[in-house]
Length: 436
Ligand code: AMP
Ligand code: GLY
Image (tube, rainbow, N blue to C red; front, side, top):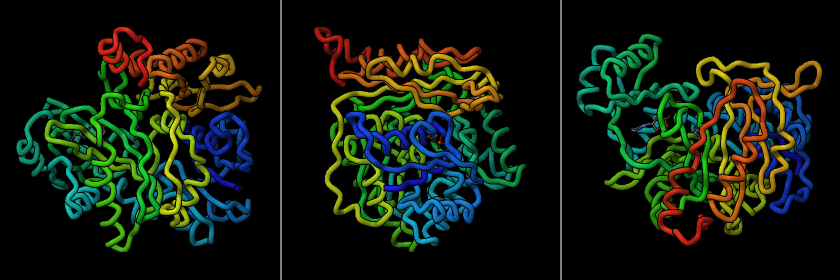
């Protein structure tokens, strides 16, 4: 199959890798193109420059390359209709239409859909007038949760006990012409579940957990995500079925009923509260870094799965197969991420890190300088993946890889999957490598 992948992050590197290699590491035979990609993606795909926010340019490139499928990684092209343009050009595209992408593009729209479909989520009010903010905050009390209604590249949500900080965030968004969603605080662990759908049939992938905060022990500001792991040995039995029945299928059905079917991946961000599962957010694309661990464990052919979704043929797709291995990913971030990451710094050791058995390195904010050296070019620079027969083994593999990378000023969290592996050891003292 000839496939064009749009995007340039570690998520897209993970997608391209899964399209290029079978689980045993043999070439799949797919012919891959990426725009714009990154140097790591270039190992598997022919890269080209392209304005990925220009729907006609993306469609024209897909036609020119004669691809059988376009896969759109990030949300920004989706919310402006790139998938629509590709489909209008007659090429199957994995990714929702402009109307369906509103599930991520507008948090108040997502709330309306959830309300119509009876999907459990945090109570909320949408506010577009500064004068109404204090009452909205008081309605739910602390901790306060204030979200930019629109896309904000991971910086739109403030969760705080400080009413002044909550007010200031709301005022700044509304002052800029936007609106905010103020909502009830959801307690409990978070889970990300990606649901592949053709608009009718919904196929869940394996759940994962990501680490959104910058600092050890979940402290500091929210980031795009500093690490992730899968599977989740602690998750309640029946979680995936519960989310399918009460979240994903009702939302997909509601979108279809409105004449705006959702096709692609519905990222269900969930909180497992004492009162049951609640939706924290929807995204309309794969999550980063969760994709790095989820696709590491998928044994079914990704290209065929995404094409089946794009063509409306998921009902005929065989049940997904998963590796028994666990996967852990640790993100290496540039100096000063997430504020203003330092770029242009030399990166060394990527090849040596990829030689750790069971490990490999996915690139995100990287580039080649004039001399052909790999340098940092963004905030989250590398995703180091470890696979192993247990979460603990996967975790040590990932950190062995991290230790081989040199990037001056960079930082990473040293506690990715630490709590879960500690719990596994506690409950299975005889088997330090307790299978995850
Ligand atoms: P979102 O962009 O909506 O996923 O929000 C980013 C992060 O903020 C989430 O992953 C949560 O960690 C946190 N968050 C969002 N909404 C809530 C909520 N209602 N209660 C508690 N934490 C939340
Ligand atoms: N890992 C969070 C996200 O992709 O939005």
